[in-house]
Length: 395
Ligand SMILES: *[C@@H]1O[C@H](CO)[C@@H](O)[C@H](O)[C@H]1NC(C)=O
Ligand SMILES: *[C@@H]1O[C@H](CO)[C@@H](O)[C@H](O)[C@H]1NC(C)=O
Ligand SMILES: *[C@@H]1O[C@H](CO)[C@@H](O)[C@H](O)[C@H]1NC(C)=O
Ligand SMILES: *[C@@H]1O[C@H](CO)[C@@H](O)[C@H](O)[C@H]1NC(C)=O
Ligand SMILES: *[C@@H]1O[C@H](CO)[C@@H](O)[C@H](O)[C@H]1NC(C)=O
Ligand SMILES: *[C@@H]1O[C@H](CO)[C@@H](O)[C@H](O)[C@H]1NC(C)=O
Ligand SMILES: *[C@@H]1O[C@H](CO)[C@@H](O)[C@H](O)[C@H]1NC(C)=O
Ligand SMILES: *[C@@H]1O[C@H](CO)[C@@H](O)[C@H](O)[C@H]1NC(C)=O
Ligand SMILES: *[C@@H]1O[C@H](CO)[C@@H](O)[C@H](O)[C@H]1NC(C)=O
Ligand SMILES: *[C@@H]1O[C@H](CO)[C@@H](O)[C@H](O)[C@H]1NC(C)=O
Ligand SMILES: *[C@@H]1O[C@H](CO)[C@@H](O)[C@H](O)[C@H]1NC(C)=O
Image (tube, rainbow, N blue to C red; front, side, top):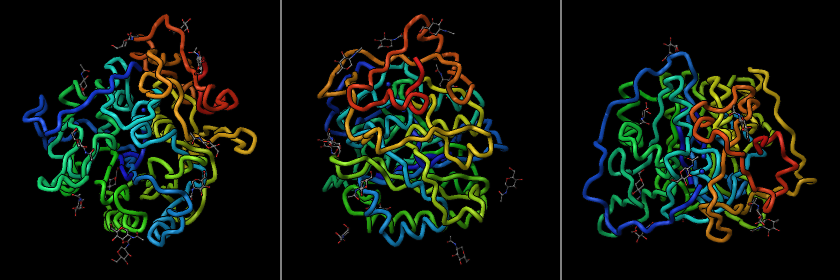
């Protein structure tokens, strides 16, 4: 699926899952009022980062699409960018909280309030943020899905493609919840020059290729991006990640076609390829590196940072030998949001001072989990031990 974020068009990221059924109809009310007000005190000096995610398309199919190929000429193709597992929802979850908590489903999952997200990191420097979810009926909507066609209920907005909505630390806070906005709000914020510095865009199920195909999704993405690429306000120092939540073939490595575009891309790098290993956790790590923010102490801790940013800050990225490591990223580990490998233990984040290139872990997270030993149990699915220093926080 396509989804994007202002500050990285894709970034994403927790324990005792409560798979719950949602009610069949849209709730009559929520605790959150719609708002046109953007988060305040944005720092004008930092780069906005935006992420747009499309859905379920294999790397080769996406790379072969002419509109994707055109977008690639506008930026840097990331040829070793991986999702974290299947299906969709855990990947969106990962981009917000630095973990998918073993999720292997698209259920009405919620993550407890003591689990932090990228929002807590951004808040430490008053960096403005928002999500733009196409066809979200109103800002702060937390329902399972919504269709603009109230006769056919055609697939449209779906909760499973909204990275922040899983987190109680976001939805229980009205100020935060109303930063989950719609594409209509995006047009308003763009016109008023009130875009946030970090944003995540999720097109609807038609445009993100989920219910259509790469030809349709890529055409939509090009039509969405082309005018923005010519908008000097939108482009000003902006880095946009265009990516997919997951590859559609479960039986192979879960690589997703990804492109960095935007005003932050120097002319001489347009049309080039960066083969560094990245995954959805790299989006959080890149945000931390770009703004000097701490880590969530989860899979973002030592994740590789986009070279465009890492080369400026001197952060060295780890090299992964895929042939040796047999890393596929196509299954979930035993966790509190896993159906197949359920474990009632929510992972305890690390407090390592090495996270986020030496910025360490967000102090409120260290305090919350003080005295508890970090628990990561990823070895049962992948040889993650071999990746220590790459995407497994030190314990
Ligand atoms: C939308 O939510 C309703 C109620 O939970 C459910 O019956 C339906 O299958 C959902 N549709 C989609 C596309 O998720
Ligand atoms: C998705 O959004 C497009 C406009 O971008 C709209 O034409 C289409 O009808 C929407 N899809 C659904 C299922 O509502
Ligand atoms: C609610 O969210 C705002 C904005 O992110 C934040 O400043 C505030 O601390 C949050 N409140 C609580 C109780 O977490
Ligand atoms: C792609 O999806 C669009 C919209 O649903 C459809 O019109 C078109 O025929 C599809 N193309 C292929 C090759 O399936
Ligand atoms: C920007 O606009 C110019 C003409 O005004 C056009 O030639 C160019 O293709 C546009 N660029 C993009 C990325 O759409
Ligand atoms: C770009 O940002 C700089 C400072 O951050 C500002 O001075 C300039 O006016 C901006 N340009 C546009 C076109 O918004
Ligand atoms: C993941 O991919 C590997 C390599 O192709 C394959 O052997 C394995 O069965 C896949 N796992 C799942 C859960 O599909
Ligand atoms: C899915 O990603 C893998 C890389 O991990 C790529 O080799 C493969 O081509 C993709 N699937 C298809 C059918 O393109
Ligand atoms: C976090 O919240 C969950 C769910 O309420 C609880 O089980 C867990 O003990 C809490 N962890 C800490 C460190 O407070
Ligand atoms: C970090 O966690 C370890 C236990 O895993 C503990 O011994 C240490 O005191 C913690 N450090 C801080 C700063 O909380
Ligand atoms: C880790 O996962 C494996 C495989 O599911 C399980 O056997 C083991 O008990 C788990 N270890 C911990 C510490 O939870």
